[in-house]
Image (cartoon, rainbow, N blue to C red; front, top):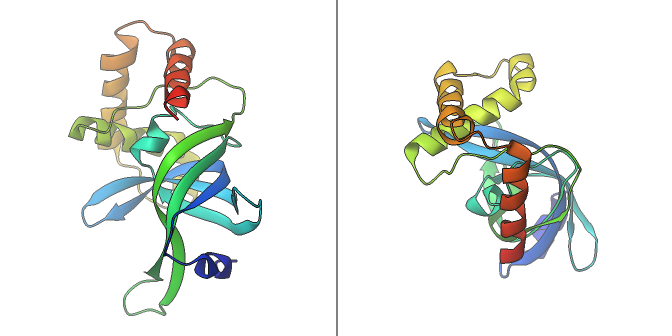
Length: 186
């Protein structure tokens, strides 16, 4: 299905819409980078299905929406780019992705409690976000033998204590305010 991404080309930005599936992380050099998985990604203008799934960097635009729940419908602008898929020394191939997501909007949300997420402007916040991802997706990572680092889990728990529980704020109320503010910006 990535042939459709290739056909779009990288000359201009396009508006996409997709369903949020889950968060994840990738290891880049020595650092973990947060990612998110969208499924059923289509062109917003035509509704044409472009790819069955797409991994994106978990950028500030997505973080501004607060915690995402499986099934949330997201719209964003991005540019198609190619990359080499596979490990060095193994069979590699050219694949296509969407990069530099911007103008992120929550089109439709699933009802349910949503938590605040750490601000990634600081090193502590970035580490806490990775801990949140590792804790949220623990079953997946354990089943696929991928690392869950206790250090990052502890950073997330420390962030919860310092920023949420210490202030005795209700996750749902605070998160709803954050979500409303983020939606009004777009």
